[in-house]
Length: 385
Ligand code: PMP
Image (cartoon, rainbow, N blue to C red; front, side, top):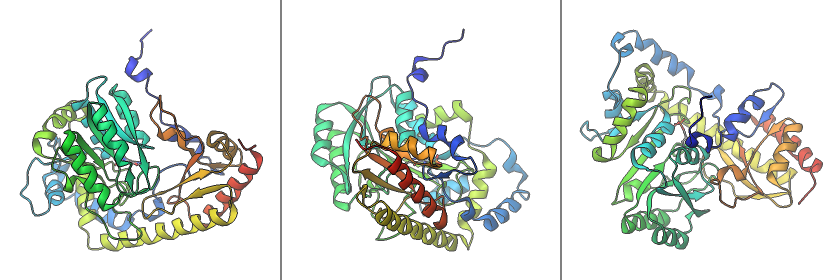
């Protein structure tokens, strides 16, 4: 019998990917995924972008591992074309390439708790030792961060400073500066994962932590939330010395990301109507966020508490009386899917069993209303702690 590697055996499958099958049932309403609304994809712009492909047959040929030069130049802006950016197959691949390039088994990674579970999966597969720092509303707890950096020989710090998945939190400017200087002090590299950065519904954008950093930093960007996730185009920016090993791993992994998708994406983001698309998208998501927040306050008063996030895709709520895992099961019986919060803690850590993550971007208002009615029924059917 062919034995599966211990690395893969010890890695949990993603709860969210697993329940995707359940949530695709026609009568199920899902607050569980991190999906954008397909109805809001910029299809007219994409169609024009696709039509341009036939004028460049070379785009269907093999290409360079670092990605399409024109897209890389667009990402670098005024700077000369350089090796400071690598196009990846979604930003998820950038995470995997960094882990495989830099982590030996038992190397130490620090991340916020809770944290993006796709990143936790990558660190598990790399057999890293994962440590955590408490995520607060305005960023990581700084005293705990310094304590962890001083105590463990941390190699990489992974964070989602803009509208984190799952908590929706956005770091304040002062915490961005403080984290950047602590990482420099302890010589710890940063992975700043920013797929939600452009989904801001209020307030002004803050500088990225990478911009403030004077030590090694990887900045991961994605087009999944603002264009379409199915095209699988993301990127990682860092200085070329840091990116060189990633390129080698990518060569071995998939040679390069699909060129037609990179070209279509470039034509899409350069299209004169793309800015209008972004405004329409953020207006729709802002309205849904407000609608879901109001419904939760009216319908589930006393059952949960939450802060309204300034952007992103999720409301992170704490149940006052119920266990989240039991509630998620009861919710499926009522045909509504939610994610219990413990999924967002690394294995072997004490998780929060009363938190739930609710997505507000994939459903329209009447569906959100139905979903909350069903969630209320699930809460009523489920005995409290
Ligand atoms: N990072 C975070 C925090 C995410 O939430 C996601 C997607 N849910 C990703 C990375 C992966 O995104 P992509 O589609 O660019 O691979």
